Every structure is written in C-alpha cells, then in structure tokens.
Amino acid sequence: MVHARFDEFWPRSKDQSSGSVMVMTILKEDAMAAVEVSTTSSLEDRLVASATAALEIFSIHLGRRLGLYRALAGGAKTPGELAAAAGIDPRYAREWLEQQAVAGFLLVQDAGAAPDRRVYRLEPGAQAVFTAEEDPRHVSPLADLVAGIGMTLDKVVAAYCSGEGVPFADYGTHLMEGQGAVNRPAFLHDLVPSWIGAVDGLIDRLSHGSRIADLACGVGWASIAMAQQIPGASVIGWDTDAGSIETARRNAAAAGVDVRFELANAAAMDREGPFDLVTILEALHDMANPVEVLRSARSVLSEHGLVLVADEKVADEFTAPGDELGQAAGFGSVETLDVDAGFFQLHVLRNFAFSSRRHYPKVVGSNPNPRNKICDEKRPWITTWAAFFLLEE
Image (cartoon, rainbow, N blue to C red; front, side):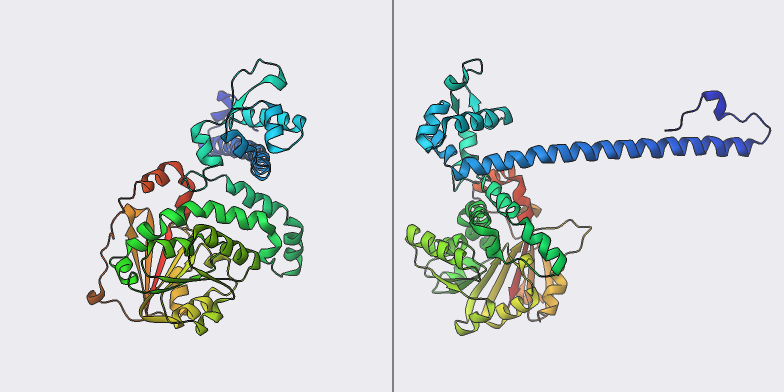
C-alpha cells in the first residue's frame, strides 16, 4: 500500500499539473490496494464461513440418517439416553450433541453439568425444521441432498475431463431422498391450490375426469397431491430413475392414492395421451434435451390442454432461455404474468398468437392458503421456485 504525507500531495514546482498527476496516482494506488485487501479479506471470510457451514450440513445429515433428531423430538435426553434411543455409541452421541448445541441447533439445559449428564432438547421451531416432514419450514433434507452430491464428486471430476454426464442414479439415495423430502411440503400443500390454482378456472376444468401426466415425477409427491386434491383426475407419473419410481410407488401406497408411476422418458407419453395437463416441476433445467421434452409434452395435449413447468427463477439481469425455449418447441407466443403479488412469474406458452379472447389477468391473484405466509417468512429459499411456464394447446 502507498502512503504519502499531506505536504507531498502539493506540488513543490510551478508545474501544477504534474503535482495533480502525482496526487491522483497516489490516491488511485491507495484505493486499489485498499479494494484488493478488502476483497481478499472478504473472500477469506466467506470460504471459512462456507467450510463451517458445510461441516454443519454434514452433521445435520448424520443426525437425520441416524434418527437422532427423531429421538430428540420424543423428549430431552442426555448423551447416554440418546445413544440408547438411536442405537449409537454413547461417546459419539456426546460429540454430536455438543456440536449441535454449539451450532445453536439444540438447547442444553445445564451447560456446566458433567458432559455425560447434560440434557439436550429440540425446541418446537427446530422440530419443524428437523422432523416435521410436511411443515413448510422442513428444510433439513437439504443436508441429505448436499451429502449425496459430495459423495459423487469423483464422478463429476471425471465427467469434467471426459465431457460426459453423470446419471442421476449415480448420486445415490441421499440426493434422491433429500430432493424429494425438501419438495414434499410445497408439492403437497401449495402445488394444487396456489400454483395450479393461479390459472383462472384450471382446477375446475381438471375436476371432471381429467388426465394428468407428471413428467420427471421423482419420488411422487406432486403426482400424489394432484390425485388427492383434484376430483376425478387420473394421474400418471413418469421418470427415468428406477429408484425414484420405486420410492414413488411406496409413497403412493402409504398415502392410499391410486397413481400410476412408469419408468420411462418423455417419448413414452405418446402411448398414453392425450393429457389435459402435463407438469414438469423443478426438473427442466436438469434435462439434456429440454426442447425435445417440451415438444413431446406439447404433442400429447388434449384440445385445451396445458403444460405447467415450475423451475428456478433467475435474476432479471440474466436472461433465462424460457421464451426462446418455448418458441423452439413450436409454441406460437409467450406471455409473462405476475402471480401472488410478484412472488411467482407465470409464462403462458400457446400454439397460437395471443389475443384478448383468451385473456389472463395481469395479476392472477393470491391464494388465501395461510401456508403461503409461512412459506414467505419461514422458507425464504423457496423464492428459487419462482418461475412458472404454462404451455397451452
């Protein structure tokens, strides 16, 4: 860093311009050095914080995988009591409990007690995050998702070198189950009333013996929700991952819902169409050939059928391929609407040019479901679910 005394900023000669250049040069170098130090310091802090957060994520994954949070949801416990309830070693129970308390995830009743006599508990809000599977605040499955990615990094490294992909199945059950579990509250409680319901009259249209295809259905929660909440709807879920389809069938059986789940890609829908609604939820961005998938979905629509795509929202400065993707798939027009007071964006893709005879209001409206408020306040991460595409036949 360059420093200078005040008298050095003032030119000693009559050449005022030379003195000005010297002052400006010193100040510029000083400022650039300060920015560099500040940026480096911020980067260092960020990496250290990220490493700490990553380790916390892995500790949460351990707690979920070993059933430690479920055991604590049954009541406060000492390390020995937790070890007995979860079937783990007492010393590991103590280490995990101490780490969770230091991280602020658990409460300890008497921190000054002997290590093996301390009592730890989950407060009600933490139970929602860690154990309440259908609560909008239940985001702890993200830890399983991240752990699954971490376990597959060697294959990702190889893919970077070869240019090939890494199949979803290679990420294992942790990613599959984590993704399904973190989506479960939104799919079960918001998909039909808030997302599908945002399209005026759509639920009524679907409530008279409609046929629905859930493409890339994963472990099936969206398919189950539509079958449960749309009267008379016949729902088929499609996915190319065998583990996901097997899990979806078990979830549907446990829920007592009649939903078909098929291990097949989008092209297989030709044998089953037409459909009144095709959904692609939080999946299009993972597909190697999204245009072909959208064409397949478009080809199996009934006369007034729709394709609903919900995917991550991107910042306004970065233009996602939504509009161009719709045009490439053969739809005639693309219209963007705001829903839920701007919380979501709705893209309506049609086979014909937009006209006032098929009008959608600029603001489709908000759903009175009280869970929406909880999602806004307690699940800020859900804002990534803010892009909707409606493809209309």
